[in-house]
Length: 373
Image 1 (cartoon, rainbow, N blue to C red):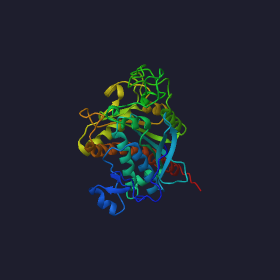
Image 2 (image 1 turned 120 degrees about the vertical axis):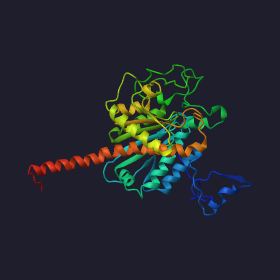
Image 3 (image 1 turned 30 degrees about the vertical axis):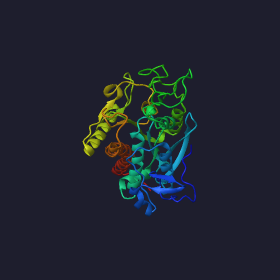
């Protein structure tokens, strides 16, 4: 399903997404608390409530319309139920090939806070880059590839009614045809099927019929894998537990840059702590959560993307996957601080490091009396 905007002639065209409206006798009626905003032909999108997929798709289209110079919608796959999987490519135009940052949200359907964070993250960087020199530099040197909802079928199913609210997986049928769903974060080709999975397709951790058997995992694998040398950072956003997880999920494997990942992760956790006082633990999944296999984070690290993290957002289990809407704003604010630290580190290591190396080389050449014309 390609994201669409309101049709021509609609009284709210160009006003931005409006979701507090109803219809009566084919005329619009308006809740009193949005009346003043309607008078100015502008209703702000509410980033601190949960939105169904249709509203998120409309919001994506609106962002591309509002920021045409920096936002483009890229369709890069189809879900099992044939819905279009889209991302937002955000960055300033450049004549040179750019590096990239990946972020996906909503790989697990019931983790509604994750898509809320992706939307907030997009808002923040778009509101910041014109006035913040650092963000402008990062958007000049890198493109942000952000998928607000990766598991579209599952996410929409979780909105169906209260009985489906805690659905986790996608919606593809199992081998027997009488059960549904694969855990997409067990379906990637990274030690697939080796630890903490179930062969029962009714299980929440059923890994699929084989590695990358699911179209959603295939879409990420192809899109990222076909340009893996461009990506400096791969962030996948989940809930809950207040964790920053680094590779690998299998206890028998250790990332070659484990020390760097821990250092950057701990610094990000410190940045998170400063916002609202929430503690995020940092480590591999076996060390701070449980072992797993087939995760997108591990797959990305195996593609030589150096900085790969799983964010497990609020809370610690009081509300679990049903985080109240009043928790959205503080959760997004603190997670933004942590994600921004990791992304800034990735940027500076690449671009400031290259500049420093060039300067050091030039100094050495001058010391040796080499003069370049």
